[in-house]
Picture: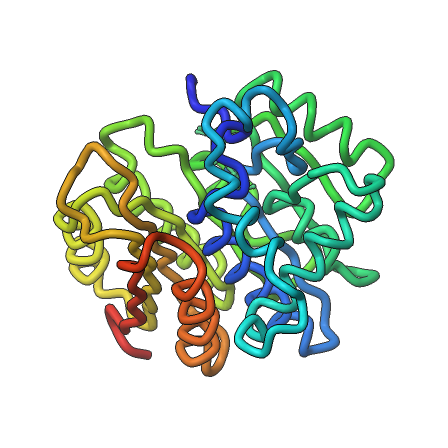
Length: 283
Ligand SMILES: C[S@@+](CC[C@H](N)C(=O)[O-])C[C@H]1O[C@@H](n2cnc3c(N)ncnc32)[C@H](O)[C@@H]1O
């Protein structure tokens, strides 16, 4: 396990994932009944963007850095408002330090009494950091458990009938897309009402397309795909874009997601950024 998210936290791909995650949580909060979130690849929860690791790549400067430099009341940032307000709030609580919230911290802040968060993180050091972050929080449990095993072992959630499974792998394994097809299928079998959101990288077009074909072959329905590319995906050595595949998306999430991606397109990348929202399989 070589991947450490601290090097990449706050980059354009995190902006896309976290802005959409915030909107998914917002949709879950519209109903009063409790929800549960399983974050299968949780990371450390909170990232110090002034750390040597984050500065070594400087990726965050082309992501959250650009967005935080904009005046917060700009009308075209409105679809990003909830997420950006959360990021600003976290930084304020850390006395203006560049502390960037990862997926578990974003989820934690959306939980209401009765809701819950279950995190899995396999890297021993990152798992310890995550436990430290949530040490006195009874609504969050942290497991040192393989994400794909967790989808079977921890679903359906014990405490709620509604919820979200976020699957955000590092894509170090060649089998990752194949593993994801199995994971999405299993998650939906075990938790049919749950939303399942899978982040994936776009280096070139063919691996994600093969992933969608494989999902279609399973016969699953109600699969929405959202993508952001900062350049045409022609050089497979680069992270040219990323996507979020969502099974069972909330009502009208195609429209809400499109607005979020359009807002990101204006400020991320170097003028060639594009977004795409498509139904891989309709409801
Ligand atoms: C992309 S990062 C997660 C970022 C996080 N979801 C966020 O948005 O803030 C992927 C994480 O998964 C962990 N990981 C890798 N393989 C795993 C596995 N099989 N099970 C659980 N965690 C794993 C890595 O250590 C890394 O921290």
